[in-house]
Image (cartoon, rainbow, N blue to C red):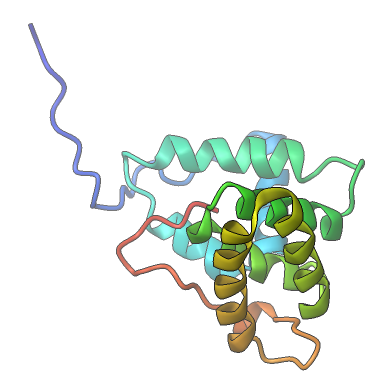
Length: 168
């Protein structure tokens, strides 16, 4: 029985699966929103770190999370960021939370508004989850250049280790 050759999941794939062609409007819209929310530097790192193993996942989140959900008219980006912060906090997704605290700042939330989201989430998701989220948010906010807690694209930084896949 033939077997597929092993996939080296650590080597970025320069092939077409790593960076899908721009022939799908949903993918294009998703990439535009992804870049607007997360910043070019973050998305460029995520694309550069895409491997054959992670290519389908990168395509999936660009088309569906960013291209189908974040592009909808029903909520503005500030509100979507509030919901995202609350859900990531409730699910204890601290690795993803730092990226979305930065995204919330890019979407216009202030440090005080992020504080209110986390405090409100503590009531419904629990104090331990919120405590972890506060630690992550405080670290990200300490990196933030502005007094209002906003961060620009050129100043956006990733807390991910260089060897990790950046999910967003």
